[in-house]
Image 1 (cartoon, rainbow, N blue to C red):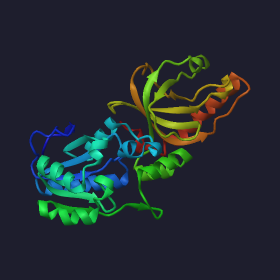
Image 2 (cartoon, rainbow, N blue to C red):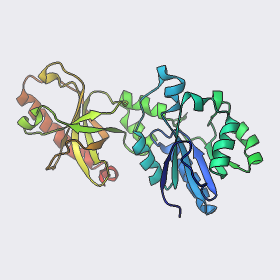
Image 3 (cartoon, helix red, strand yellow):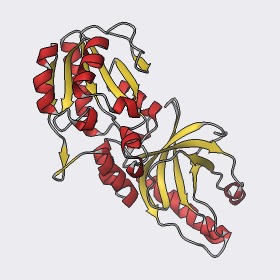
Image 4 (tube, rainbow, N blue to C red):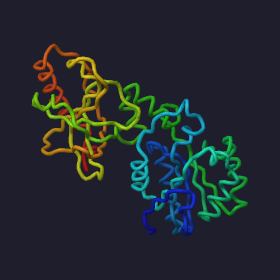
Length: 319
């Protein structure tokens, strides 16, 4: 089996892989439709005793092509790559998407990338996928050009749920509206927030509920409120159950949006460490309490409710 590799840049491929089976996409969120595509790629590569390759882009092409309407990513690039590898891919090739790259035509992409760099045997692609300058490369173009370059084109059927295609933009909308269960169904796992633990003001600790204060990367956030969550270390080896507050802490007066998590049965510090927070279920809306004591009583109820809910998510609480 070929070794797992991550390649960055147009000139990153020094030697073509053996019998490359390639798929192409942004793969933001690596949702269930992406997973079907990746598994089809891996399966065909193994059948051919070849190398499975995913080509992805950084930044998201929309940031270059239509920055006014660009949306935050569902996951950072590093998490995207590790999630793709976890599905069995051999290579993940990250191409820089620039204004110059956007002018590459569909045929130029096939010739320069798939043929000259990868010597691709097959291209596994979603039925609705488009690529190349002005999005001129669609399935009809691929079916016409692929065989002339010795590339077998393998279409993968679109994944639909509730009558609509599964897409990253649909998942972003669901998260923003608080549709956590629906987003989880489309992702195949709970939506997650990503950031680094930073120093806080110590209010939670003084109340008896120490929190990890998280500086989040730009991303789509669920509505303000209190949530049952699973916090995962960057290497994925440790998972802690917790209760997250996402909001402005109105009990303490007006302030900026904060993300803070009280970890259950945790001793130590995560200060300075990158973490992910899987958002399992919403416990309640954010509220302003008349006193610290009243807030503390509610936090105890939140923790008790979260403990009950964790039993519904055993698969997402394992390291």
